[in-house]
Length: 262
Image 1: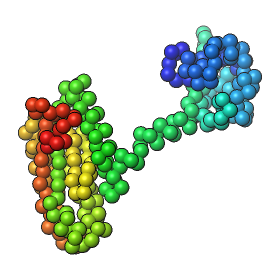
Image 2 (image 1 turned 135 degrees about the vertical axis):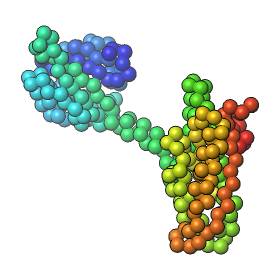
Image 3 (image 1 turned 90 degrees about the horizontal axis):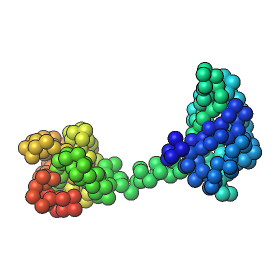
Image 4 (image 1 turned 120 degrees about the horizontal axis):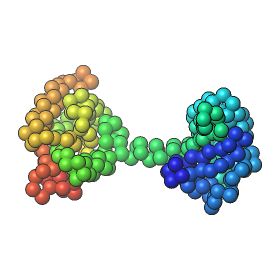
């Protein structure tokens, strides 16, 4: 617990600190246990409002309740941070002797979520991944190949009539066509597959495979499904998709060149 990456702490029945994890000390910039030992939150003076946590802790100590996801604010090096805290009782021979808790910096969590869901990985037209997001996924698949021996394939699909359709019906119609194709792909590819629009009318599908024949059969199913699109926004269209496929097991193929091999 002392070496956990999370900010754990524990207190006696008087709500005084007895110890904490190294992450706790690192978060607040403390060098030793003596900085907090025997002190309460109010002694530390790091909460803008003492009430939320001061009022909850006696309930934990007296009634044995568990506090979950309790929001609060703390001051860290002159900056106000939003945190969320969990606390629960500590027992010895059936008696509550103190409490233990852990808190998370909500501001840092929000920032991390934003980084993970960065819109720069998303194609604004189809809602699929873009080239950047696809390459990020590709290296994840390749890592699984290295660590877990999971083979995968890259399927590239291109609509050779996209340019002529766009010229005849205009850019808005062409974008609607792309969205229609993206929806079709979402319904057709397997759960272990990721899809991206990597340029114009070219889509890329990453899939795990057991055999090359399995991947080829999946490609045919996807192709036939795309070719069932005959109307977009009520207007008739004739589409011509073709595909190329590369397998991670092919000689000389790696994550760095599999896109070009396909």
